[in-house]
Image (cartoon, rainbow, N blue to C red):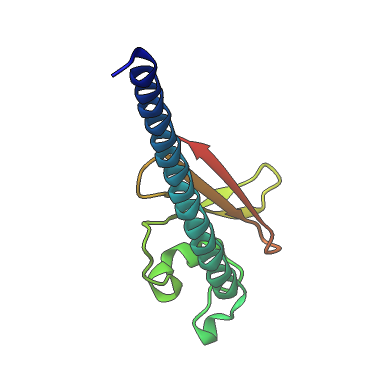
Length: 129
């Protein structure tokens, strides 16, 4: 074989290897993004159920506008989810309570924290681990 042919074969192998590496990287990114989207929807669903329980009167099995009771009654409203979601109550400086939902995606690369205030507003933040 001529020197030019060997050079073309080596160059082709390098380009194919580079294309494979880029493809694997793109698949990994999409996988992580899919996990993040799934976790975000499950956190929002859990927050929705918690807020419904928060507003429900005690006579109907609710928590009567008390987030401490929402956390105590978690087993009655929290569905079984793919992720282990931790729920806690955080009191702001103004004296109002917020529910804090926290979970990590299965590959452990990111943690989501969703806060739910007394008006039902939510805020979702992501932290890269």
